[in-house]
Length: 459
Image 1 (cartoon, rainbow, N blue to C red):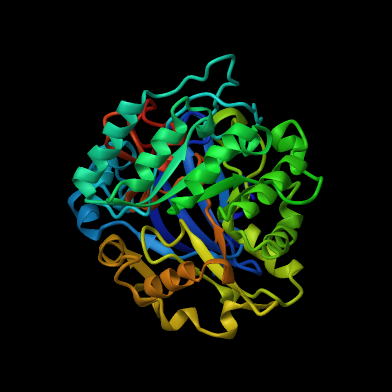
Image 2: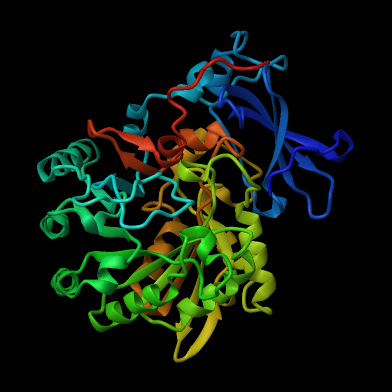
């Protein structure tokens, strides 16, 4: 969780210097990443804003879930002596003095795991924690014209050759007046492997005509719902959505089961529902149509603002392991072999003949990690060379995904805000948002909306 008062005596090792942000004014700053001598050791980000003073935040409450990735040493050397650099010669980030204002086009050259496109600006809910800040729809929703959406997607495909996973998002994408025409076009496109629909499920649960059309789309395959789900418990529901929507989500799951439309649950994690991480995993395991759950610790974007403490990936995993009573262990999880290793942590449980197995019972991630195996520091060059397609770990993950209902995916996706900002992660981001001109931008940078803030660095 976010803190501001770690004492110098508790800091045992400086791990790196990177670009970060002032939590108040978002000015680009030099940040220092430290390991504490506590038990368990934690990972702390420190920075000082010339106007607002020093800040600290915990970016990993257990150092066992932190992998030290560093920017290009070549870029650091080229920037040595730059006015942006700190006294020890380390610059703001792996792209040098411009690290915190990297043009979106840079991401066109990186590997792309998910390309998200916002097709609707408005929503049929007004969640207090909406990271996009989407306004409640009054009458006809504010949507992007169909031809423009197609142009943006084609522009990405021209540069990338294909899109592995296209995520239709918003706002609430199911409000788009030509939603099913777009969905059919994406499903039938030869250069789009898979389509995710990021939805709150309201229309699926309440609109019978819409559901009938969705049934036809499900028959074309290449489709999965990314369903907003805040856990099976009551705690935290109203804080997240201003209403308890559990019955609605249960109906979506029931309906999708009847049409064989796979679901990934997307759970925003707060202090209120953190104790129910394992309950959510157990809930998902009981429903074969649910192929996994992605936990997203709440980050300060959109309507949420800058208040309150933040959770990190280690908080989520520790809760799941502790509550599982031995059914999960630390050995069940590994960083994904693409992008930055701190951006996605993944694990699997296997449903075999009515029994549940953890993945560590049948394989050891360490034997498959490739560039992560026996490594302490990972440079940007290391990460450029790896990829889900070529790494042994990536091949195993793909096999699990092809097993359908027998493999249950557990993922933690810790998006960044000003408190947790690490420019080294941005430089290797593989979760992108398609911009109006068809270029790609990092998900975290797009929703943090730092582009208009000062680019100067504190010293």
